Image (tube, rainbow, N blue to C red):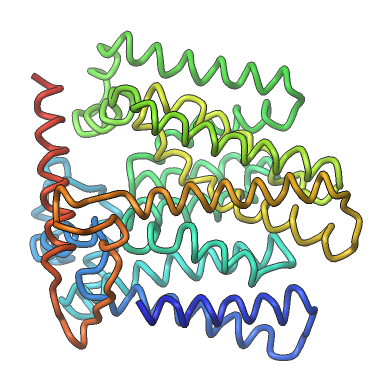
Length: 396
């Protein structure tokens, strides 16, 4: 855990020196060093993270480039471009750590570059990214995180209405993770989400109709390849959340709503962020009823971080913000942090005695020690076994 605390302290110190105090010396150097540090922490870990364990176990069976001509990708679990990335990693060295390093490099370099282009408060944004999404993107949803990064590269194409380029990016993203299929209708959503409240309601109605129609008419999935149809059904046929999960979801919506209200009132929210915030508000409003679609929110969550930082820091530094707005911003930040803390402290004692969900990441182990922790292994494998049993029962 010490490595995480030292990294956070370094991030916080840089945020204070450069974003709050406005120092200029060695800004780029420290920004690059932090990026490299985050790549190394994720790239050199050993069996740290939940989904990491699954990828670690299966990695040996992933095809190499010489095996590609004889591989039937329709029979494999993942998408072809993901296998191309793993094959490239194996060209360097067959150890799984190489793939971890490649994946972490793709994710963190893309996010750091995106943050630099979208906000003046880069260190504060990275600090929030480290707290809220770093472990999830680098140690859990490793495939989808790369797909998210491809989408981030496509954002400029949507804004400039270069739709042919946007769809090229989406095809690439889809070739890494199937969840990117939901990005195909996004330009239409983006158009309406740029408009006023009545268009937001229209967008909500459109998304609701789309998912309800697919759920009520699953026969249309028969016209899709089996692999795609099954994954789509997993997303939209996952059923409702429990009441506690639904409440937490609506708290997230309130936090985003506060960011929008305060940002517009004080003219400190980049208008380019607004459609993406609204999109996640729509997704979170539907998630209590269709749990699986929460994964789509991952594509837009970076905008939540950027919006929160811009809404907080800009007005506070220039003293243009009223007390009531300050309170709203504080509440928004606290709500998002509370959601993160609540998730990471979920009691997992039913899988491993006296553990919490954060034990998936703590303690940290590197490829230098190669030490396994039974608690981490039990939390993941027993939980996954239960999930697979539930899916089988639903199919029956």
